[in-house]
Structures are given as C-alpha cells and as structure tokens.
Length: 201
Image (tube, rainbow, N blue to C red; front, top):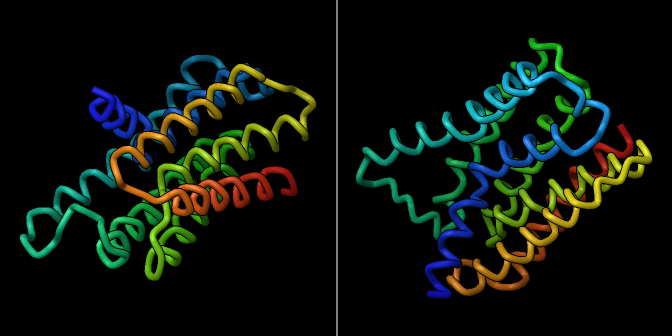
C-alpha cells in the first residue's frame, strides 16, 4: 500500500507535470500577476503545458520507437537526450510567452528553468541527481524570492510546496529511485537557480 502511494505521488508530482502545476499555483498565489483574468491565465498555462509536458512526452514517444533507446533513465547517458530536448522545449515556451507579452517575471521563470534543466543535464553525465526535487526546489525558490521582493507572503502556497517536496522525497526514497544526497543535490540546484534569478533580476 505504501509503495503504491509512493508511486502515485511520484507520478502526480512528476517533473513533466510540475511546471504546469507550479505556474497554476503562482497565478493563484496572490502576487500582482494573480489578478490576470482567467482567459489570460489559461493561455499562459496552455503554453507551459504544451512546452514542458506535451512536447517532451511526444519526443520521448518518438524516441521509444527505437528499440535501442531505453526509457528507464537509469544512467546519465539515458537521461541526457530527454533533458536536452526538454531544455529546447522550455526555451520554446519562453519564446511563446514573450510573444504573448506575458509578465516579465513569468518569462524569467521559464528561462531560469532552462538553466536548471541544462544544469541537470551536465550533472547527470557524471552523477545521479533528482529532477523531481530540482523542480520542487525551483518552485520553492520562486515563491520565497517573490515574497521577499514584493512583501506578499502566500503562506499556504509555500507550505503546500514544502509538504509536496517532503512527500516526493520520501516517495523517491521508498521506491529506491534516488539516494538522499541525490534528492538534496536536486533540491539545492533548483532552489539556488530560481531563487537567485528571481530575486536579483
């Protein structure tokens, strides 16, 4: 039962889905861009979903046709190509948000996410690192950086992300996907990249 629950958590909070969930949280967290009308929010979410979830999954589906390509992602080489594709698609998402004249902070979040994915790519070539925790660490960094910059503190959103981070980390350990330092390294990378980018730019 516990293992099944861990699998469900890992799927719901998968790095492919987290950008869209994260943007949804940001757009409803009380920051100044939360006052966008629903049509504008929906358009932003569709762009994020398309560039960070749909396109990467389509790319993986095409790659999976080749029997030489494994979807286990157990080694750095197996993870390198998906991460490279993801960085390209994230950048496409940034370009689309730019065309929509979205709030600058939303575009900064997307371009900073490209840097996180590239960082994961480089680290993965030699060491294992958790992309789940990198995504959650990045979302935590965004919320805290925006809170310190704007003076708005959406406690419920921050607490939600911290709880989600704890649940995801526990699930990854239970499933044997990562060791503790893989989780810590991923979380630290995501948090550092996004916090510093949002806070200082």
